[in-house]
Image (tube, rainbow, N blue to C red):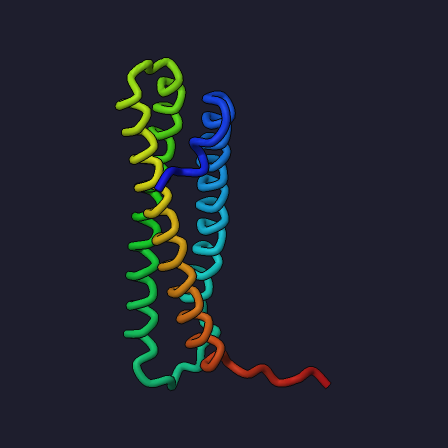
Length: 141
């Protein structure tokens, strides 16, 4: 199946690829902000202390969050390299080189989608768990 990015002039195609790469970087920045919030939440003292397996669950979440951070860092590096390769793509007269770039773009796009999906699932799991064991505060009279 042809990529919709191949429609249009080479310049339009390059701009679309660049825009998509910029969108990925924006998504990673947003994920980074969410990770910071979740990390602070998991390391805070807002949970009921008598919750069974609380420590183990929190450690599991923190380890899984660390894996997301690693994947995010890897993706950020790959996107930067991918963007610098984009500059050379238009200079390449060899269609094979362009096809290889589009193949790599698709692979990177799939990895971004997978990273985002995995993070959203982990975030939901953490929030669902945390929501049930937050300390109850006495209402101020």
